[in-house]
Image 1 (cartoon, rainbow, N blue to C red):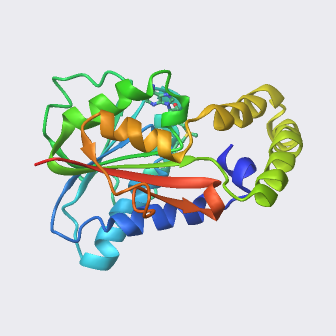
Image 2 (image 1 turned 180 degrees about the horizontal axis):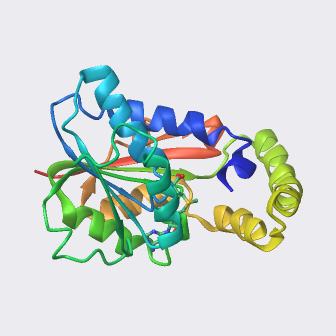
Length: 232
Ligand SMILES: C[S@@+](CC[C@H](N)C(=O)[O-])C[C@H]1O[C@@H](n2cnc3c(N)ncnc32)[C@H](O)[C@@H]1O
């Protein structure tokens, strides 16, 4: 689905998202990748830490509500060097209510969620849980489709979204409805400044809206990275 909606560009966005977080730079860290069933982000985190910093101690707990997605992620990891190592684990859970016995307070250094928060019914509940499980000083990072700021690009993107994406969905999977939902859910997701406020409301500190440091648009806002830090 990500391929159809971004023409494959989501891979580049994910590369940038992970490399800018520099996982592994400060030694072994504990990460949680929520709504991460495909393992796309987890694999990039582990690769980045190993390739850049020779870090083989960093760990990622992948969480997803959908057992099928987790199965897919697990299957992909089977082909990697991380399979059967303590560096990766898969868990079925709801981002809005992570089981507190398993995902304890103040336990992670990095929380990532890519193209997942939009699908959750309560964004504040997800943010509240992210804040709870992060250690003081830990980072929340979200990659999500967002609002295009340039009117010309916005027009072209709307044309593509409302005609091509459902069509591609029908051709690729025969499932037009899911792709129609995808386009509509992207439009309903709060724009950058509103989402940044929600992150602050959950207790995180972010950069400033005015100087462009609260979020980083990719491709004019088609996708966007928001980060927040849990105050120490
Ligand atoms: C578009 S996929 C993104 C997967 C992956 N992060 C990526 O970028 O390739 C959205 C994922 O969110 C998961 N999801 C939806 N609602 C969720 C929830 N409440 N808690 C955890 N995962 C959820 C879905 O099962 C799905 O795997």
